[in-house]
Length: 66
Image (tube, rainbow, N blue to C red; front, side, top):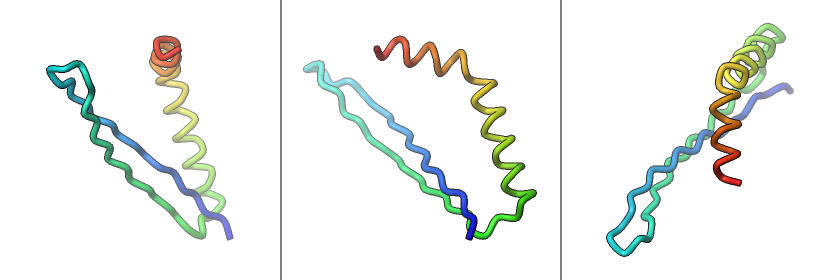
């Protein structure tokens, strides 16, 4: 069986007056089962294009985190 599963996590934070952070996470998991070859290829192309289009943003954030 082929399947595709990914998780999206969105964190929203607000800084308290004492300097601590109050973070709220919202996590969504998506699982698509029994993909056809065409669906598999289309999803792979989609995610590759998302990474390519946002690579500079991702690199910048990772650099700032380090």
